[in-house]
Image (cartoon, rainbow, N blue to C red; front, side, top):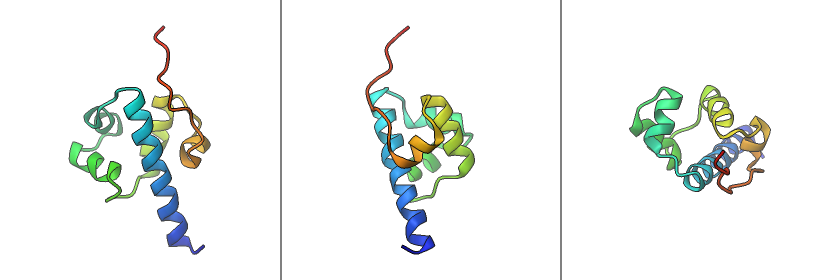
Length: 85
């Protein structure tokens, strides 16, 4: 797999994982955009696979969803909602 293909595959995995986590935990794209310091349209483009994720955004999202960066990038996360405390 060449570098571009690998980067697209990682982007697609991050997109699917973030979409799944956001859906299962009822987090809006507007909230994710605010967290990442980008506009809602930019977040929507990322969540629809039309724009690539920035490393800073992936790190912020991993922290927010309380998953490791490695798990977020590999898609190895539980999409179950977090229990209320």
